[in-house]
Image 1 (cartoon, rainbow, N blue to C red):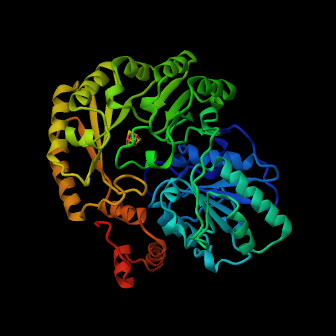
Image 2 (cartoon, rainbow, N blue to C red):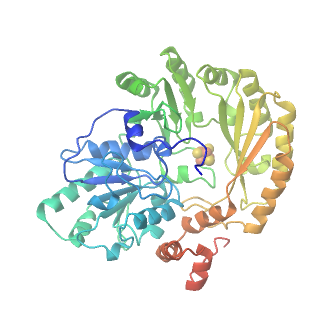
Image 3 (tube, rainbow, N blue to C red):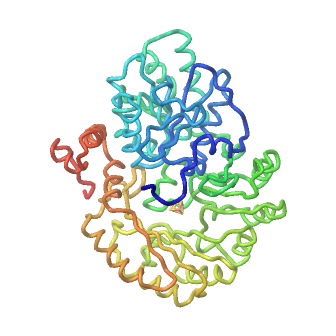
Length: 491
Ligand code: SF4
């Protein structure tokens, strides 16, 4: 019997539904593909991946296809329909720790030898980058030939230059990897003694990332995205964004010039994205200018204590229905001590004004299992107060995740909370908050969060164990026990 639900859109339909800033003429012999290990709609919402893909295709005599994951099927070139193994160069763009398992599965499904040391002259060279590798490349070490750490805009072009020179000379794989050491940001699993300096793209304030392609099938619908901020000046104790990138804001004039020049690729909506959009000093001016240009506008999130009625009304005029903020904890003192600047009263005021402005939903991100004493009851009482004081038509939507210690942050050595404790907190929140009228609450599975915590600080042995777990179908915890690999992110 055929399953009901939204019919799957074919690659050719997706292709024909796109409007792009450039066209690619693929040569007869495939050159490269960049894999984004999520479905297509998420790929269209990731400016990091899209920017690297665009820059690769701006390199003379070089073309790069894209690949996404669609269920269990082996990923294929989005434009060429070729299997990943047909490309001599496979790039991987990864944002999250759990991408590693997905990538291992994709390599196996594509009949590509996952272990770099076993790949030979006829196999693809695998080059990976993105936030998760910049934070900790070690679990990826057994699988990638090179990782490019930091901001990839210029690094990727320099890498392709090295690759093209190597191709022209017809050297060995080992020679290519030796040449990669010219790049200070190149992390080489075969040479862990090198000092690696993550790349920084100094032109960023004048050259912010913008969508090179729009489609109604993207996560935000037909929306032209611009990276309004990179990094974050606030330095919350748990946050990987501020630990990875220096904080910068794109100037309003630069964003508006980009909008005019590209005509937003015909999209009627502009998406302002980044970790610190709510701190942008010209945010209201920018919103007004976008509205005056006749476009809708959306933002990735706002700062609770900075969002006044005027700002919210501008966003509602721009078509925003759901506003996202991140109080992180229900305990005000703890919230302030971890780096957030919003009091309970600020959040209550925001909820009132959000309803008054006409927003439909207030989405709030919370963390549990923080390494400081916390009372999960505080989330319940704060939500109860919000429900009582916010207009009834404003829906409250809570997304609760477990704290995962991230490398480079002040809390990098803090433990991941015990699974039992996290599950008890989640059950308590679900039973109390899930029953409140006009409130919804969501959780990530603790098992996946624990795996992410393991990978966040894991090493090459963990990567190999993950491969064996995938190959044998065993849960990773069992595989780690069999192999006697340390497996406790709980510290
Ligand atoms: S405000 Fe948000 S993006 Fe900025 S450091 Fe804190 S958690 Fe990270």
